[in-house]
Length: 344
Image (cartoon, rainbow, N blue to C red):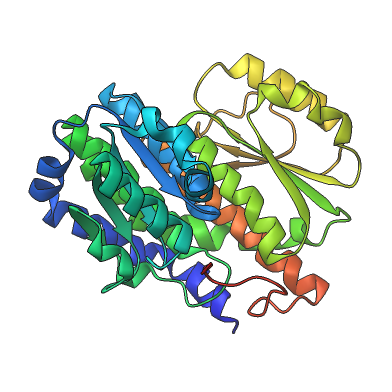
């Protein structure tokens, strides 16, 4: 078994431990999050995609302004960001806690602008620990494989849980516990369908997702590049019509994460996409109401709000990438030209 396959399939066990850590440290987390006037979430690569979701989710649940920046951009263009970053709280997301851009950018923000630094990291005793005011450690979520799977889902659930804690939404925090319950039946049930989809005659992928789930779906698009070496992009659902649609054709796999929002608008878009490609996977946050929606349809578990169901959408995407890589003869544990984290 490939290392990445083992980590992919074990991610919900790790998520159970992450939810327990959030519960155990709820008081400390609440204290660290209280009083934030502006939140800036920093990350690189997958972590930057997750940073976008983290910022959106934090603002949606608390009403506090939040935004995401790539740490490398801040490092290169620090002078241009000074006014934006002054007085903000930084939240660092990292698998390793060792990525140079994150460490160096956060150090400058802390030393020169007096920023408070919070962190979520999948390693213990990482270099990032010399910077933070408060840290959530998730060592059970650390991916040994170069390409990330369980680290991504655990970082996402961690920042979602922090948004719930900051907003005082204890009922939403409790819903996180249901993930592993639903995973035991949902994940095995999708294996045959998604394996067959992975054998299709497509050569590139487009992943669509909105709202606080958008950053997570952007990471899903990145998984195609890293795991199965296919060109891929992420777009918001209706925004795909504004240019990207011209690049979607019979060789394009489109994966759309449907929200519980305005269904007619989403359905109309899917009908347009179905006319362009026969490779359309719909991951639906609404359970039991397909309503004539086209494409290969998978209803995500009824485990809570859309943003929580998105964890299962990511799993489906990772599984497609894994099976497609195997079908292509790709060595999943040795991606060419890719390192687990970057040191400048």
